[in-house]
Image (cartoon, rainbow, N blue to C red):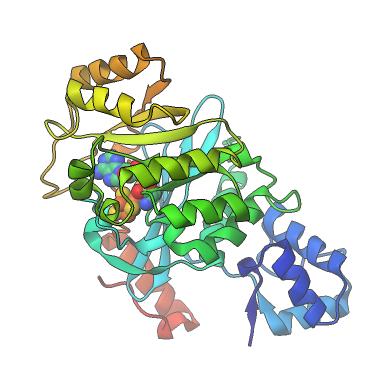
Length: 370
Ligand code: SAH
Ligand code: SF4
């Protein structure tokens, strides 16, 4: 069977090369070609003997999910849509800022956790992405951004805040995270790679052992009663357990705080009393808060808190000494804002896929009709 070499982190690739009777340094060379030079085939790997290149051509591929569309927002945010087969697509968002470029990466097609205010959750769960499909988003975005001579922006940070719950796809996530950190691949520091979770407690502990990167926890409510409704996984792992897991994680984390994300829903979780209850909840967890004004989608049933309310809520947290930021909404015009990612395939992208299928040998691949 042909191996997709994007599925392997350094250790996995070394093991695969060993199976082929090849030395570990070959794995490092190929890793650099793939992830640093963006190679998508073996022909150009000039420091690798021709005989090995031919062997690789016969036994391996370098295959990310096909890029279907690439949209640029007025504010510079860029949204990539990838075909992951069987009518599913996932989205990746590049967010340029003055001092950094952040790539927001998806971990699943859909999500099973059904948070009430999330468009991905509304769509239901399709499947876990493979390691190649997760790291392939970074690989492909890098290739596209580097190929633009008018655009010097680079990816300096990765946040696992796209579609899906990363810690529900643990085994495929970890090799992808390791590639992000690997000096022979993307070489990002642990502080610049963030996993965002809705709070799968045992997996937070496993992440601390397997690959401790920065952690963001989607809190969204100060009490179990409300959180049970907004973030249903809370019924399984209630707030007291979640706070204890955050404290344990801090022993391993690359930063000395946890980031709590808090979506601001008008009249639901944005009262002064909610802010004060939050202060009580997190009293033993060194943390920062990131308030996210709710991003609407059709039939969500929620409204965004007014800007004044968000400012007032933030002020209560700040007055108590908690660093609190409010997330700027970016890329709204292309539906790329947090919680709006639904992997929607628009008519133009459908046409592109049909054209690609007509052109080549991909006609057996599942089509993209939703
Ligand atoms: N599943 C993970 C990561 C993906 S969601 C998680 O839940 O943490 C990334 C962030 O966007 C989470 O904090 C999520 O709660 C938030 N979010 C979801 N829907 C949103 C919406 N409609 N408006 C604003 N933020 C939203
Ligand atoms: Fe899944 Fe996160 Fe959306 Fe909840 S907020 S449904 S965990 S993607």
